[in-house]
Amino acid sequence: MKETDMHESHPDRGAKLPDFLETYKQENPFVVPHNYFSELPDKVLDRIKEEKHASRFQRLIDIYRRWALRGILRPALAVASVLLIISVFLLWPNSKEQIAMSQLTQDEVTDYVINNIDEFEEEFFYIEEANDLDLLSESLEGDGLEELLDDLLDDIDEETIQNIL
Amino acid sequence: MASDKDPNFDRLNEEDHLLKLLRDSKTRDKGFRQLMQRYQEKVYWHVRRIVHDHDDSNDIVQDTFMKAYKAIDRFKGDSKIYTWLYRIASNEAITWLNRKKRRATHSIDNEDSVIAQRLEADPYFDGDQTQKLLYMAIASLPDKQQLVFNMRYFDELPYREISRILKTSEGALKASFHHAVRKIEKFFQDVEV
Image (cartoon, rainbow over all chains, first blue to last red):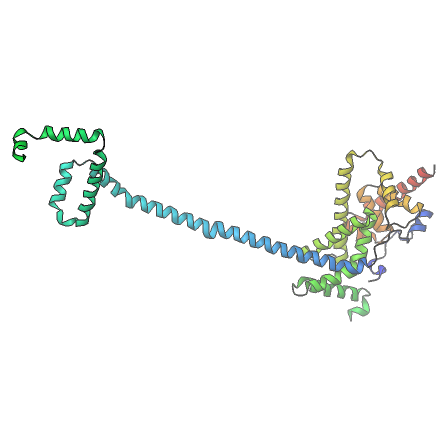
């Protein structure tokens, strides 16, 4: 486009400028590096491409963040909350039962086992027996053994001892 | 034919064609290259006369075209493309000047001598002493007066166009140009004394 294309008639076009200004009006003392203008469009377009690439990457990060927060994290938190609530409701009666069981006396438990012996697996008794043995072996060390023997002797009367002998 | 009546028809037609290319994402880069080839020199010299230094001018011109590229969808076409580009470039150049002034607040150097030294050291300034003084005188003007003076004196833009670029009335622009010329004259008289 020619320079004059941009000009329209205006009222003071012929206005007189000081002489020194008239002299330097058309002179341009500035210069540019060689090939500057021929290379400039490529440089700007390269920058635009770089920014597009960077913004695309940034967009991916943003999407990931949104996805992580809304798509995954929030539903996960919701599911976890629901599971927690369900667990509390499911476990609550068991807890009550456990409290009730702990309040039973040894005799009540024994009676319950004897009356419902068919409901217990045979293996259960072996385990219980083994646990009892462990407890016994632990208590039969040192002073515990002497105390146990003393207790047994106190419970046995003389007649029983003579019968055994 | 409209082209027989209107001497600007071809140019307007070309501008419409350029806008079509720019608004279509498939042809945007092609259109943008054409836009730069057509206006980059005018925009560059407009900026260079304000900031003087080539590297700074280069940064500002690149930023100007980057902004134009990003904002092309918002360009309504109610002004000519070069008016729009000049406006972006002017804003960028003035922002740069203000930033530079803020940074130089604590400098003890006189602004005129700084400009003179910068032009002296600039390998891309090939002017004589009077031209150096002229650019020092222009730099001493208020920012907007600099723009008006440069667009009128160097670019020879009509007041109507400058009015569209700077969004200022033609009367105010004429007064601004008149004051700028008087100040530059006085600057030269003071130097000679």
